[in-house]
Length: 305
Image (cartoon, rainbow, N blue to C red):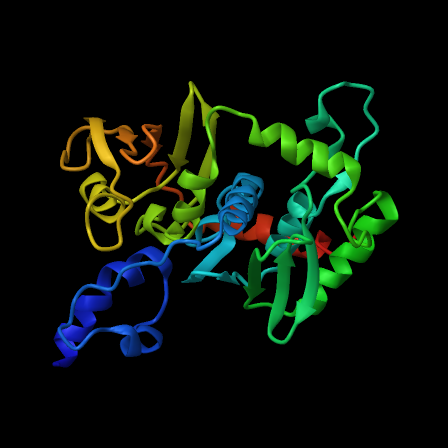
């Protein structure tokens, strides 16, 4: 098999995950077939990935890397995430993901726990492993000094009742998770595979941000500076790396050199019947002096209260 054939076989997966060709070369078949992206094997793995995605995606645009994710390494029983080595990104992830008790008199169990219910972490060689007690779900965060994560956790502990030291789920966490499982629209089938392809939502610009939430009996997906629509449709559609999503409706300005404005695609997932309403704002942001100043201040404050 020629080098060019092997490169072609890994091209779409590399575009979706950010993995280097060298790490994928051994997975290419002798026939040089395009390399697929494995799905989460266990429902608990998919649920954890979806919950982490939705908690982290509000970070906004910090670099070319959506959610501060440089690359992902999808395996059936594990998702590896290489993070952007910026203290602000690590602070944000720990702050948004780690569960804590919330004093609230509401009867809604979602108001009693913030963060990802049941999430715990442990330090492993090379990174921080996110997991849920009693499940096989695992996400390994790498690419940064693990001590950064631990310093942030120490700061959060001084202000919040973190649930990290609980060996099992608390009753409030169980109630929150159970309540979420009764929703008629399930998040895991959409956002677990999307997190495993998160780089597909990034455009060629200097600053990328991706956000998502439940909406209108389906889901909203927004990119501030996403890729051209034909590319996104191919990567998430019927290609070898795709999800099988169908473009049900599209309002696209990608090929117009005289019309400014965003793009909109209504995707439909045939496997579930869910709609994902996507928009690309085309903000055109750059890593200018103002943005660099923001990151300097944010990194300086990452290890302070």
